[in-house]
Amino acid sequence: MVDPVSVAGLGLAVFSTGAEYGNSGNFSSTSKAVSYMHPKTPNSARWRDMNTRIKLTAFHPRPGWSRQVFYFRLIYQYNGYDIRNARVEGLVDASSGMYTSSFTVNWRGQSHSRQSNPVSQIVFNFVGRWDPHGLGDVSFGGQLVISASLNGSAYESFGMDFSERNWVRAGY
Image 1: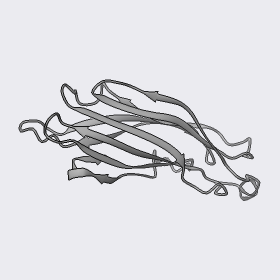
Image 2: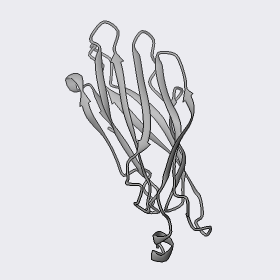
Image 3: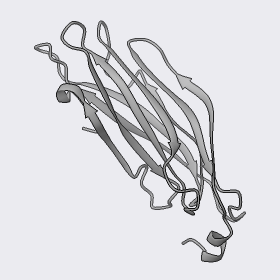
Image 4: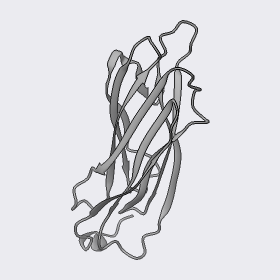
């Protein structure tokens, strides 16, 4: 439970970005580590680690091919007020093998909650391209929202804003 006296003293939050993480090959994902911190977070706030998998799936139009699944590791620390070192990393070994097709995605984190809100939220806007070699080339994009809340959920929401031909989906 959040102490109202502590919340009143939090003041405005500070948002920052860090080093870029990426990988290469036919499956490519980039993300910068981001943090959203309040200047007067109570010293009693305990940091917790979040480390979970999320996925995007892509329809492959070639007969005999199943849908392609691309896994990502969502990593951050939170304490009920703040989020630090949040990033999304591509998991090449866990994802579908890519031989001639290519799947690229860029995750861009930014503040999502107001600075005066005692519980920080970060949104990762993502955009990408799915090219199943010679059978189409589509763009897609969406949002992943994370929160410093102690509710136990890895994320608040994860969904698509657009997907040409509806070939790429979040989750599924």
